[in-house]
Length: 109
Image (cartoon, rainbow, N blue to C red):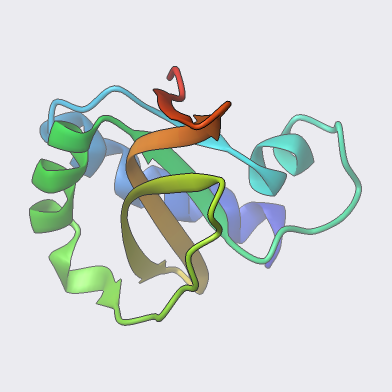
């Protein structure tokens, strides 16, 4: 994946996420790579949004949806869906929560 491909994928999904009326942000390795905090190329684009936003966004991104099995991590949970846009794999996480001291805590956008 190149920066150009990543930016083009963002150009495609941004209006759809905005149409879903979802607060969202890019996080993980793609965010670090795009802003220069990492030189390691990401394997996908991680997007975090609210649970309600994810449900609406899934409908709008449906033409790009791909099926993918993901093992539970144990420390994080969310509603996840996967897409392929401009050669870029996109991992949407809605309502992301982290297990802290035995309690699920929402990860802030």
